[in-house]
Amino acid sequence: MHSRRRSTVIFSSGPLSSLALSTTLFAVTACGAAVETGGVVGGSGGAGGAGGAGGQGGEVPPACRIEAEGPYGSGVTFSFDNAGDTPVYLSKSCELQYEISACADGYTKPLFVHATCTQECASGSPQGCRACAPCSQSAEMIAPHKEVRVAWSGKHFTFGNDATGCSCHNTIAAPSARYRLRVPVHASAADAEANVSPRWVSVDFELRMTAAVILVPLAP
Image (tube, rainbow, N blue to C red; front, side, top):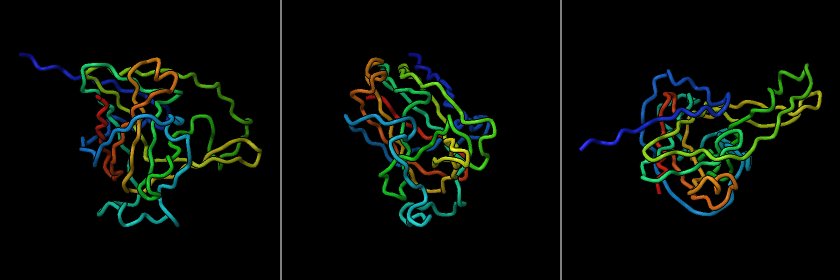
């Protein structure tokens, strides 16, 4: 009997997911995984709130630290893997929708990990404020025995206004520490497009100096 072959789809989720896949990536086992149902799907990559990756006063609590690591991580690649026999669907609105939160604040608030329609506050807005078309809601299908890979650069953002009044962002390097990914998984494309009836999958992982692939099992 021939074994099934697993296919991989590389999904580009914008400029913040441009962590070069040519970089040596080491596959790792996530620290833990959990599934929950229901809830409300937030914005792409944590548009539901602004957490702090460094904890109170910028210090990473002892329980969240990674020993023998430098101060900042080099990013990770999430492998959204469907090992089942039926398709699963992820919501997409400009970017695939998922959340990353930090152990340092008790995983209570998602980090903003995308800043696709603003520029750095320090650069100003010499050509005026940026204007972006709204993103349509769509579904990303992951077929049986396939995976979609999405890179996170290890950076997150805070937002404000520059001296000209334009919206802008500040880029923050997330410290080497423990984090949690949560992704809403849907049984149909219609549910994913409407952002209803999600099955939340969560995986705890470590952001280290060495780039890694984090397996996120999505099959029911």
